[in-house]
Length: 429
Image (cartoon, rainbow, N blue to C red; front, side, top):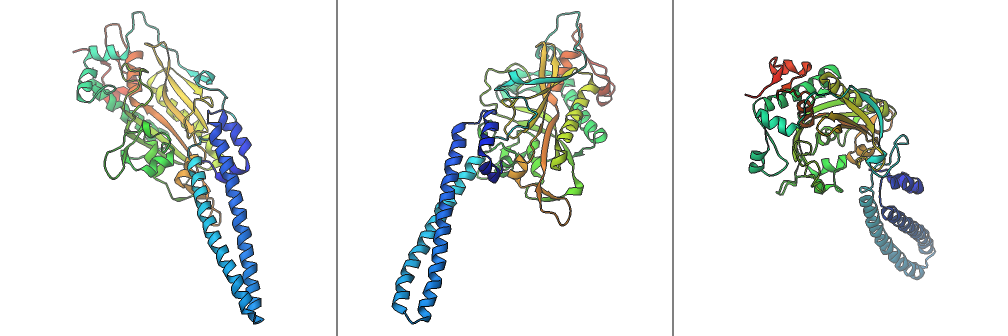
């Protein structure tokens, strides 16, 4: 959430920044109208309060002078002023509520280093690692590979639930579990994150804190009971909101947490996109990374978080590239985002496997996460960062596609073999 005072004092600047993100100008114009109305009400309230105070003093002088009739007459006028002030305060409360509601719908302004553009065509590639594999045979996609090996079943998943769900069996399930453990070990043992097992169900306040609500409710799965709970779309939500409404010790920052969770997304508006296989599912596994930092450290920490995610792909020997997203392609809460994209032979291109974002104080302001630099300092908002380390399903399919063999088997990356009891390949039974 944006700082209302900052927006009020820098409305033209905020307009310039948010227009690059596709924010509607009418919302920002409406903010200006509401603020002018607010200022008018404040002036009227303050003027009437000043008049009431001066009249009350005058009434006191009249009473001391024995002019009770005149004093009573002016008392009636003061009572009218008091009722008018109450009415103004009520109007002012409504205006401020409307302003607060509007401000929650505005995205985070982009950092100055973010390329300006309306969509992904303006994204900027800044790094590549590894060489995409070359094959001497006709390659297949992960669906054909997985089905031929008997480790992927989409038809039965559709029967159980519906489209965009999957069943992994045998070594397919074991590979998924191995990847979860491998990613957690890399992040906790090598990159210094604290592992957390959070709730997979959260309340509305938590989703407001990280920016999914109120604007993106259609993308969520809500439980249909009086508690108004939701299935998490990402572990970013519980990991960040662990510290909601708290004032942290600045000496403890950065706080680095990692969690494996299933994630649930309705994928509203994405019908027809990536419908084949595991690219875009309603339920998928992910290891998420979250950092809480001091403001002055957050961009250095973003670089570190992104490297932590990339290190998983490097250990698995999967070629990838890093892309900085344009203003028109970033998520709602982000001030800057790097996408890490893994090479997929079946599509002959790189596809997203992790997004690493610095949200600056945007989420912290919504969730009221603050810190003190020392005992005498005023509380400040932390900066929050998040990223996938990694999306497990997409890593699973990337291994199948990049390590496929001519005989239909799939070689297991060396770093992953200890997690699969030394297995060096998945072969058809």
